[in-house]
Structure formats: C-alpha cells, structure tokens
Amino acid sequence: MSPLELRSHVPAGPIELKWDKHRFEMKLVNPANKRKYTVLVVGSGLAGAAGAASLSELGYNVKCFCFQDSPRRAHSIAAQGGINAAKNYRNDGDSIYRLFYDTVKGGDFRAREGNVYRLAQLSVEIIDQCVAQGVPFAREYGGLLANRSFGGAQVSRTFYARGQTGQQLLLGAYQALEKEIAAGGVTMYPRAEMLDVVVIDGRARGIVVRDLVTGKVESHLGDAVVLGTGGYGNVFYLSTNAKGCNATAIWRAHKRGALFGNPCYTQIHPTCIPVSSEYQSKLTLMSESLRNDGRVWVPQRQGDNRPPGEIPESERDYFLERRYPSFGNLAPRDIASRAAKAVCDEGRGVGPSGLGVYLDFADAINRLGESAIRERYGNLFEMYQRITDEDPYRLPMRIYPAVHYTMGGLWVDYNLMSTIPGLHVIGEANFSDHGANRLGASALMQGLADGYFILPNTISNYLASTKLEKVDPTHPEVRLVEAEVAERTARFLSIKGKRTVDSFHRELGRIMWDKCGMARNAAGLQEALVLIPRLREDFWRDVNVPGSHAELNQALERAGRVADFLELGELMCRDALHREESCGGHFREEYQTEEGEALRDDEHFAYVAAWEHTGPDQQPRLHKEPLEFEYVHLAQRSYK
Image (cartoon, rainbow, N blue to C red; front, side, top):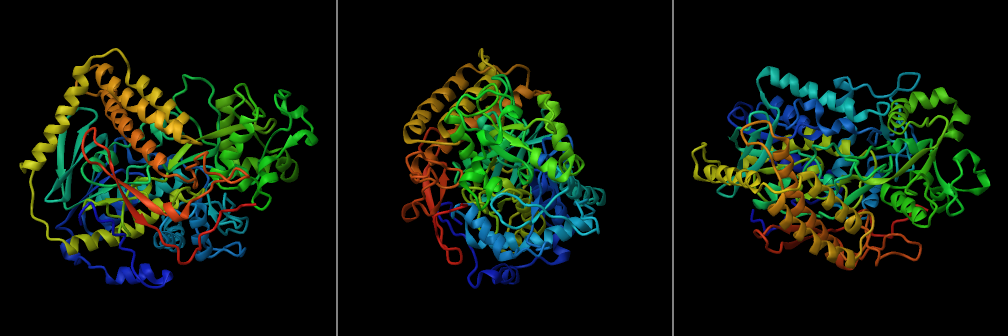
C-alpha cells in the first residue's frame, strides 16, 4: 500500500458483525508454517507483552525488545484506576453498545466507529483472559468481581485491583510472556532501545537497536515489526509518564514513511499532584477512581487563603457538580480539566501557587467510614501523603490537571498496520480508538485488546497474504540504516556544547504547555512554530553529551529522545493550528460555545489528520481520512 493511500480497511456490514466477518475472511497461516516466520515486537508493556506472548503461543518466533531491565518495569505498571468492560455485572443498563457509544461520544466524535465497536466487543473477553491468568481483581463480599464508576459513564463498568490495576494486569501479561521465553518461543532483549526501522522493498523487515549497557548497535531482521512503545506525553517534559517514556520508536518509523495521526490530541488528566517547583522533573497521577468518593471544590471568593477546614459549606463551589449535574465529579477528563483551569484562572485556585483545586473525601469518610475509604484507595492515599506530607484522611487533596496520555500516534488501519506494510502499531503508540479524548480506564482495555485479540489475527493475515524474500544483515538497506544511526550518534557526541540535554527538554516543555497545552490559540501556536525550530537549532549547536557511545551513557540516550521531541513538538503545533475547531483534548480558545465548552466543526474537520514526513526541514504533507458516523450520530457533546 502506498503511503499516500489512507484505506482504513474497516469491513462492510452491520457493525456488530464486522469483526467476526473480518476474522473469517482473513487468511490464515498453517500451524506448521508459523515457526518459519519471525516477528519483532518493540515494547513490553501491556500491548507489547500481550502481543509477544500471544504470537509465540500461536507458534511464531518472536523477538521482544524493551529499554528497561525487565518487562515488568514498563510504564503500564503505573496505571491505577481500572479497566473498562461491558460485562453488566451490576445490571445497571450497560452493554457492548453502550460502551461503544460512550467511547465515541467521549472521544468527541473523532474516532472510527468500526474500531471502537470492536474494542467494546473484546472488552468482555479481556476480563475472562485476565481472571484466568490470576489477576486479583477486587471482589464483592460474596466473591463476585466488583465494579466502580469512571468519568464519562453513568454505569459502573470498571474492573480494578485497588489502585494498582496496571501493575496487576502487567504481571499477568508478564507471566504469559515469561512462559513463552522459557519455552523458547520468545527471545527477550532487555536494555535495548530501538533507534530505527529497516524498510526493504517498501516493507518493514527489521529494526536497529542499541544495547544501553554496552553501547553495541546491531540489527534484527524478521518478517513483520510490531511497535508497542507507548505515547509521547513527555514532549511536555512534565507529565505523569515515567521519565524513560519517549517517542523515538514511532518517530523514527514516521520518518521512514509511517503517517502520524492526530498528533495534537493530547490528554490532560484532571487529578494530578500540582507542580511544586520549577526544578521538578515529573508529575504524579492521582487515580480518576478517587472522583467516585472525592468531591472537587474551590472557595467561592477569589484569594481566599483560609485552610480548607475553616471554609464553611456555604462558601464552597463544587464546580463540577454545579456545571455538570448529570455526571458531577465524574465528568470526562478533558471537561473536568478545563473546568479546574477556569476556576484557577479566576483567582480561586488553592495551594501556594494558586494552581490547584481540592479533592475532598470528608463526606465519604463520614458516610462510609475511614476503613472503607482506606480499603478502596489506601495505596493512593499513602502515595499522596509521602509526596506532599499532608494526610488526605484529615485534609482535602490538592490536585491540578497535567499531561497524562496521547490519543494521537502512528496512523493504522483496521488491521493495526501503518502505512509501511508489515509495520503494525498497538496500544498507545497508535491513534486508533479514542478520538480526541480517551475515557478513563480505556487505555488498559485498548492495550490488551490489541495485544491479546486483534494483532494475532491481523498479523497472520498479513504474513499469509505477502510473499517475503529472505534478507540478511548484509543487505544494503540494513547497512545504510546502521550507518545513519552511527552518524547520528557521532554527531551528538561531537557537538560538545555548554547546555545539558535536560535544559533543552525543559524549555521545550514550557513552550508546549504554554502554547499547545490545555488551551491553544492561533497566535500562541504560530509563536511556538517559531520558537521550536529556533530551540532545535540551538540544541544541535550547543548541547553537551559527555562520554562515549561504547558504554552506558544516559546523556546520549536522552539526547536522541529529546532530538525527536523537538521535531514531534513542531508537528503537534502544526496539527493544532490547522485544526480550526475544538474537540476533546484539543481546545482552541477561538472555537468554544457561550458556556465555554468545545465547539466542533463537523463540516470541515470530521476526519483523521495523518501527516507525512517529506524530508529534513521540509513542511509535512497532510492526508485526510474522512470519519463517517452511521450508528452514533454527530451531536454537541453534553454531560449536563
């Protein structure tokens, strides 16, 4: 498929039958032939580990790569609140169709219906899979699996393991992966960072990786490549992502021909611990699940600096409950974040910086007792107390929005394949399921759906449909990519400037947050498109990367990642500037309703923006995939 053709390959027919019909129509690989194929999986989080284990169980030879010292340290482990599934165990009106509807609406009508419905269908299978693995989901007193509510839904469909759901799900996927490693089906390469994709005859056939301990650079070849490398939220420097999270894998693939879908769609999470100083290097998430029992409020009066216990009920503004009575404190993340920003901009924010709102559990503790709250959220409360030295059982938490997730990513079709044939992209690394705003507890759902259930089907279809010539490390394309990686590395080490990599990253983060963060406008984005190229020039002239390439060198690792962020940040701003509407997490101040809500322009922007890299210092080329809504009709989103 040419990179210029955006064919979604969503099958025809009724939406509830599309996936089953597609699975039947896809070609299969004979079980005896699967061991003849090698699949390279980059990333070992929920999507990557699930995909690698599942492909190995089918009989493929799998090589799995992660830059951490163990797959268990993937950032999926940090997910707290839960995973959605349309099991309807509460008998409260949930269904696959309702989860589909809530997800399309929550994404502000900027996702493919076919992909989202498949995700809702598979959600019920994910829970069965994880329970069979021994994932210790919370249970009711009688032993049945428990559920709680999350933002953007009026039913309780979120399965959870206290405040450490991601950790428990990752341990389940990790056990499946380790079983396959022990059986010889998966070869694991920890402490290995992918630095480029090898494309031969128009197809992804391998990757170039650097051993982060020894510095050795080598190529690995196969019949298909899978990227499950997560999102790019660290372009903002301060985010809830782990410090190691980066965009290098997807960005290098983008520069080899994979189109980048909707890069400006970034999610701001409303419940994070506020920034405490300008020297801070990352932020900490407080799970959305806390909004089940916590009430969000600020003083009614500007500049009211009294301790929260001294502010009477009559002088408090529970602004989410006031503005969105139907959903209250469980309004979707983009809406809750903007509402928190609005009250802080009015001068009613709390804490030393004024950039914070209260998340108060006093009512819930009085109603349910401290022991019940401790049982539900104990580890989260403990984490908050360790970081802030404030006891949330006695005082309200202080929270403020922060970058948490990226809905954008490499463009993929219904089969999770990018515009480079053979390059599949799963989990947060692709753009596919969440539109302009992800609902809470849906990231884990997508990662496991992609890895356990979708990829094993679609990658088999690709391999069965494609005649692949044998390639070896002496192929000219392999040598060319290796030489380009070596040249780039040598360039970093030769600059010998005066500024650290982190100083450039911090400056980029400030530009991105101020100009392309929770709110954007044309003037700010145009300014960013001047500042970022200028900063990038300074980086390549004045960055200091000490040490050598032939050893453990974390400055060199960060330099490569920040160099990619400096290019990706510009594309994000360009995408945000071109999209002259507000939708989900993309809020253009010029396009809002009288009540301050996002105002979409469905006539002109109901499409996926997929950007093509055209060369160094060249303007990217925009391609559009129109979005059609047959089942969930376009409407102004309302959570009132």
